[in-house]
Amino acid sequence: MTNRFSAQRFIERIGALSGELGREVIVLDEVDSTSSELRRRLKKGARPDTVVVAHRQLRGRGRVGRVWHSSIEGNLCFSTALRIGGPTDETVPLLPLAAGLAAREAAAETGAEVFLKWPNDLLIQNRKVAGILCETVTLKKKEALAVVGLGVNIADVSFSEDIARTAISLNKVIEKEADISFLAARFTVCLERLNRLISEGARREIPDAWRKAAEPFGRRVQVGDITGKTVDLAPDGRLIVQDDAGNNILIAGGIVESLG
Ligand code: BTN
Image 1 (spheres, rainbow, N blue to C red):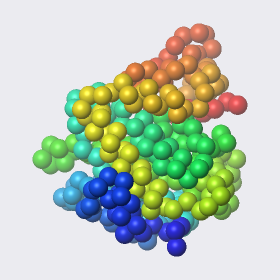
Image 2: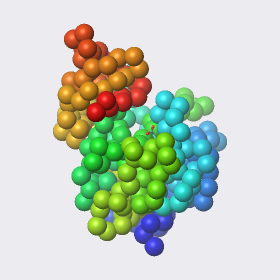
Image 3: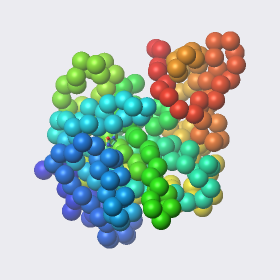
């Protein structure tokens, strides 16, 4: 069955893509949030290459305190840890963009046409198919890790009323059902490659690649109390929005709502 995550298929696929053989994979039927679970495990000493996957989340968390709906099986709820290398003020802001690029590469492997919306939502036909939550965890030995949580709507089921007009499922738009384990493996390998690039100092590559994968700039948006249009991505990963008075504002966080 391809629409249920399998640790064995995930590990085999990671091996095929990167040659890497060992990894700690925790698969749970149900959890509050895979990212919360991974944070708890890392604080108790879990290996930094641990990933946590759940068939269902009861309290899936989104960016800026939002809820991520994931109580139905057949979707990907996945969290992985990353070692943060290099000066954190330069590297950490690029991780969400790198995670978006990795998720896009994984989703595109299924044949879907996917665009990125700042900072790392995945859009198909202008609707959200996946979201990413990047958080940092500081451990007792002062080692800083990032926990990157990826949620992908895969199963072609009806969404709850509050997101029915803005969400879409991957299986709705592709011919053959997506393989959840392969999708997660491709995401992991790509994210680790980009994280290595960031740590080694190749930081221009991430915003450059992101720009090419993003929905077109010029879209009318609202971010908090700012309304205007998206202009570009700044080299440090912030979004440039030109407000209605003509000022360019750098957006570092919050939710960018499309106004049409
Ligand atoms: C967003 O779009 O605001 C981010 C959504 C991130 C959801 C994923 S699902 C796996 C991981 N566990 C969570 O609780 N959240 C992330």
